[in-house]
Amino acid sequence: MRRRHHEQQTEQALCLSLVVNAIITWNTAYLELALEHLAARRGRIDHDLLAHVSPALMEHVNPYGTYEFPVEAEYARQGFRPLRDRPSPGL
Image (cartoon, rainbow, N blue to C red; front, top):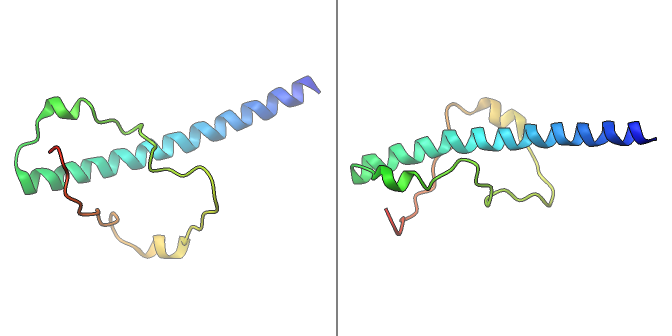
């Protein structure tokens, strides 16, 4: 019984690691796109400000609810999703 419980915890930890790594990879790719877009619109970006940006942020991830993944539509799309164009207060 104890070993089985330990194995389940290990599997859950591995799954959680996979999800967290996927989110960080996604965030990294889109942060790079967003920074390129911002630099193209406003010029040079202060690297001291970039020290406070991390791809490990997950405030935009909703861990609750139901998700739908339109797999066929995702396979058909070329390139990245479009960025949202919001005015940024500090940059």
